[in-house]
Image 1 (cartoon, rainbow, N blue to C red):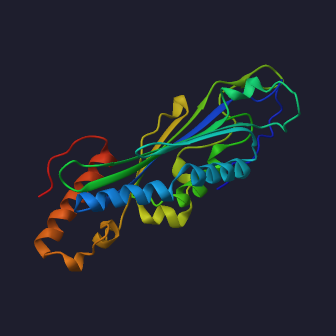
Image 2 (cartoon, one colour; image 1 turned 90 degrees about the vertical axis):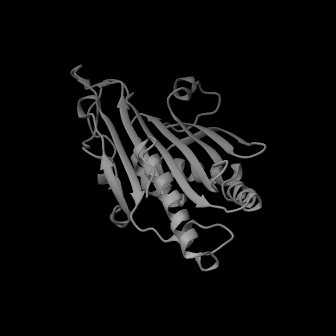
Length: 257
């Protein structure tokens, strides 16, 4: 589903702020210190600042925004960040664009890390798409979901502020929405278990997603389950599922037996 441009007759310009935030997680098991180091190196290469910049530039194109500035950084020992300032209006040389800088932006930060004892490694990417005006971050939702190989995703969408129609009436939202799920592609919805926590009167929408299928081989790094004993496979599977359930629920949970 695409969010169409607002056709309301407004007084002045549309200054509603719409923000779509992602937390995307990739879970993996690396059985040795060397394997964990290789996993972090792989993630750092696959999602370096250059690749993340390309993704955010594509997001800007999808939502119909104009890029004002790009700032990116790869970190030592790991991780990367990119920030892009955008505007809805066409860029005019030497024009004053300060009004857009604090409201319209795209950001991504990555956080590769590993459990100190159990071999569980978790890669997290945090993404914010914040726009001011008619352009909607929801139009880039499926592109971003497809750009990351995510086991778990948490999504937040919020509309803040207000604009006015030509009669002076305040408008606190300019489109209909009752769930972020309505904007997620059907094939993606079929792959994930999803739950909503929405506060409709505040225009706050929250969706959590976790992959339905669990194939252990998809979570092993530098090893396959054929190389492991059945007992070890069961133990690793429990550890991985424990990690995923705790991230999905946002709290530490009783140990899976």
